[in-house]
Length: 196
Ligand SMILES: [Zn+2]
Image (cartoon, rainbow, N blue to C red; front, side, top):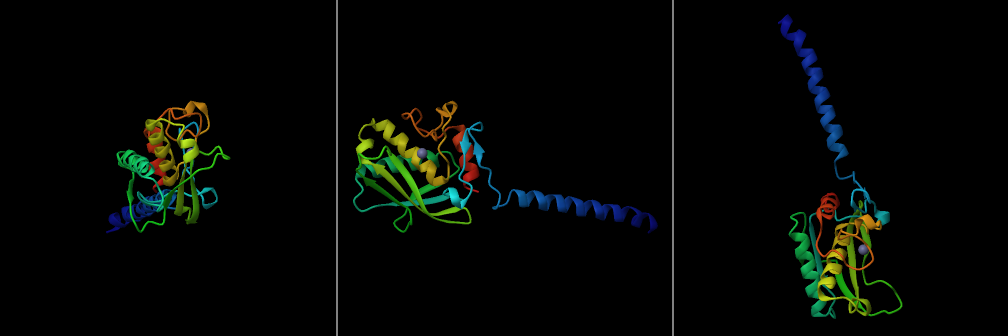
């Protein structure tokens, strides 16, 4: 009995310490924690409400504005498919989705396509709208349009534009043509963080 007690107390202490350590680490990796990434890492995530937020879920839906042309529906479907192939997200059409894909025609902006987040909750996107600017989209080849749509779909997940030219080989590179048409390894790593 004496011997048992002698080892029991240190054992209890050890168990308590292990539980405490696990609690700390599970807290650190819980929903409140978000790794924003960096240009060096090759991916960046909108961690907070103030910067658009991230999906916070692997399940993302979208619907179309009533006047959206079929070609834009097709680019969007292709884009969703390219992200779904990564196994990290499931982006699908839903007529009840709060997220809408629209088109417009404006020569007075340099924006080719964009995603605007109008509502976030707890750093997660609640409502976003994707816009294709017909005026500029028309200047790109078919394969490039699909690449642009895939880039924009990356924004709906919560990925940020990359600006450093060392990241020109990533789908989330934000300018200078469309060198890449599919999510790359680093884009996928970022998406893994953005769905948390
Ligand atoms: Zn972008």
